[in-house]
Figure 1 (tube, each protein chain N blue to C red):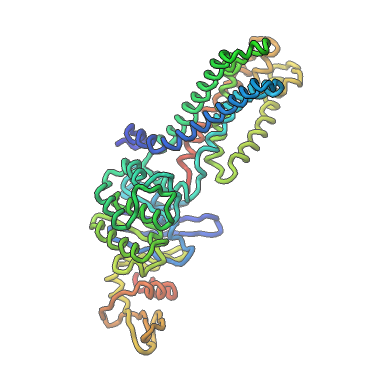
Figure 2: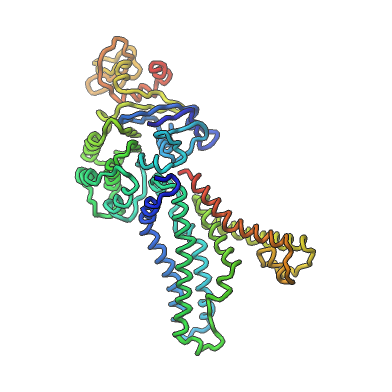
Length: 254
Length: 274
């Protein structure tokens, strides 16, 4: 039997977590589906003022679910809930892979699939006939673009780390850290891009996250240092964060 | 089976729980005794890999416990004093968890449930604390792991269940196993535990078999209070006392009196059993 990874042991561990996982997937699907149902009710009720807001809310909520799920869906790490779980003869690799599979693969796929379904069936409700200028393609280039995916999984990795590091009020602490990061990273990106390229950027671009965002606004080719900074940020988030989560899981004491 | 060497552990640096603790635990049903807060549960946590030594080592079956190696964990089970149970029946719980323990005996499990009068099809969350405890005890005993750690197993059990627990534990024990029971309820474990480990803050007062203890200490009931004793307590028909066994007399170890004697005469007891 391999200490690091044994497929039979891993499958048994997945079966053990299956019931809770299925419940979580249903909850996530229920939230997205429920929101869409409310939107349809608003449309057929003629409440057009809120329809746009709710339609925009659906992909936002799907993304939020993906990001906060590790923090909210996993049980708090305390002596009552976690002793027997951590006593289970399962390797750290298997524990981490189980979390990875659930939150980084399956849950995002479920959310994406539901958005596809919403997108697909919306056409059949002929909403466009009522509001000709109104088309909602969730799966446009915007939602599946590279940088957005890095942000989503980076934020989720932060949420996972928060779950592992904070025993109490993890979601609030993570939210605070996220706000601080979203404040400082653009400033750092803005400043570093400005120093490296010497270009005077419009301060309105302070909402952009990665250094290359600033330079791309002007003209390619992007400065090679800016490219490297971008790559470093994309390695840190989410890959390095996942690695940190793996080692933190190993170090957890109950 | 369990080797602890120069173990140092603290929660806060100002309050050390163990300092240079060394201990060997072999086969047997060990009673782990100690005053509140000396670290009985902490020691069990360290042995089972839930807590890591700050310094020193704790090896279980040759594995460092802090690594939580699956091979080690499949040969060890720790039943804590308090635990949350999932929203499933004990039967389903056992089916899902038993896959990780190669020596799990389903027949033994069903027998344990029957003896402890636990309904295996009822959801664990819908049962009382005592019933949940009994369900987990039935499961723990059926795992047949070489090492079994029980933290206050009789807490929450009614009197008949305590008796059944003793009977089941005695029936599953064999000379290849190490069972450590941490408990304040020593009367529940009389005639079961041997050897005895009495923990003190940062140290061990005693780690000996009942035979070794009875060779060095004399447990007596007298009508009058003895002149010299390590511990003396007024009983219904006289005095129960613990004295140094200078004449090599035989007596039956009274675990409660032993504990009181050890706690009140730590240095003497440590020197006596060196």
